[in-house]
Image (cartoon, rainbow, N blue to C red; front, side, top):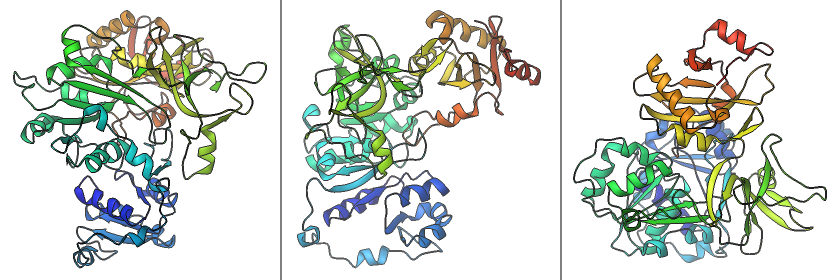
Length: 512
């Protein structure tokens, strides 16, 4: 379903009788939709009538697989509505005998990865994990609190597990919006007395892009929680809306370790930026960072066959030691689960879970996210972090949004060249591109300045507001969108002649 109370009521009701549910991304269609439903080994699909067209397109595939299809909130031409059946059901709690034998550690639901690295994978979530992932102690939540999901998708762990989980466990209210709206965010916060708001990905930047008003901080917000809040927007967001505390957390739906970084408004007002931009401090001895070879796309192993720990300031993959307390439940896909497990890491017989994230720690033990493995690329012998480059380029006043990744140039052996997919407020004029280049050169090392610019009408994002990079990397430089290339200290439009010259053997003449 799309975001609405019935979605929560449905899976929560099923959980009460011991039935496992799979929370399907309501934006996917056709083959990815069939794939997501199939890997859950579901026997029934309950869908909202607002998605009848999407489900109807794959109805034949589902019924061939023995999956019963039921419509809620209306009817569909290919199946009957279940509304009349629901009305006839008793309003008393279901008998506990229906969930007899269900354990705290049993699977409650499947929550899917965002699909930024291929088709979504179904992560196994136990009753214990769902109930234990929250902010109750950190935010001192009480039944009088009002949590605002900001229109984040309820099928994802941020809203569905952290947000709804706290509502259920504390007994407070949760405000659901069908879709995120930057223009209505503050209006909703004020109108409904929101005390806690959630964010993810680019939400804060979208909200900050709206005109500022003198009474923006005149609200009941005391706490915000989420991840992906970039340092260049953090203090602006917290100060503008008078948020007492922002908790940036790092973790994954299927993960066994993470970080929290809470920054107080009072500290920012005093100029205390301790830990600013980090995801928290490294305090858990089970978490460490293993040296990673970006060029080989593999963990570094020494002559004895063991991994090596990254030193202070060096990016390494975050891994978490597997213990009875940090068991990795993984995915429904056994092969995908095995890829996440490392054995004989630092000594014979030890086992770690991979996160797929490059992180680094500074002298103060503060941890910083660097990039997803596969996003960092190597160009002319240097490692380029897409996240760090995007962070700097986003500060250019003429840009609305940027997405940085590396592309392979045919017949070129220098690695992957930097591509910045972007939306420019003034359009790609000679003047605006020159100012953008000046900004890039002033704030980035020469090897990290984008070699290519791809002008987009709108940014491609996932359902959880993350930039889509996999397909864009595959697209390379042969796309319909206008492409500009860097040569002789200026960006030039890519035409057939330039494309042929750049892609000929030894033909990339772009120089910074």
